[in-house]
Image (cartoon, rainbow, N blue to C red):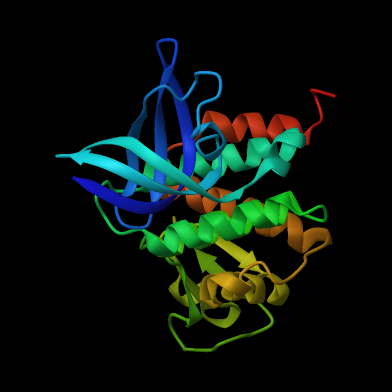
Length: 255
C-alpha cells in the first residue's frame, strides 16, 4: 500500500553500502522508521530530500508497520544548521526529545509543526539558542500532557503577587502569603520573579506561531533556562547524551 506523508528526518543510520534507515517525524504516524534503498548511491534521486532535518513529502510503501521510500519531494531543507556546530547540536538534542517521546502510529501534526517552526528559529542568524532550547523544552512537555499549572495560586487563587512560587512536587503555583501555610516540609519550591512567571505563561499558553516571539536577557534568561531543562528531565526521568554534547559546544571547548 502506498501512503503519502509530510515529515522531517530526525535520524539516519547506514545499512550496508547503499541503504539506510531514516527516523522520520510525520503528522499522521508519529516517528516512523523508513528504509531508504539505494539512497547512498552516487546520483540517487532522493539523496537531497532524505538528509538529516530535511522536510519533505514522502511517498512510502507500507506493509503492516514497515515503511520504505517510493519517492520524495522537497518542502524545505535546513541546510544552515550544518554550518554552525552549536545550532546543529541543539537541533540534534531536540530531535532526540521528539524521538524519545513520540508514540508510533499516533497523529503528531502539532509536534511536526512545532519542530519545523523551531528548526526555522534555530537557523536564523539572530537565533538565541539558549532561549529556543528553553522554550522547546517547556512547550513540548506541555504538549505531551505535562503542562505546569501556572494559572494562579493553588490556595487563594491570586493571579500575581510580589512573590510567587512553583511547587516542583505538585507542578502548580502558590503565592508568598500562602507559602508557609500550605507548603509541606519536604516540598521543593522555586521562587519565580514576575518576569519569569510571565515568560513561562507565555510559552505554555501562546499559539505555536507566536511561541518564540520574545527575547530574554540577564538573570531571567538564566533562570528560565535552568527551570525548563530541569522540568523536562525530571518528568522524562532521564537525560540525553546529545544534551551533554550541546552544553560542550556552549562552553566552546571545540574551538
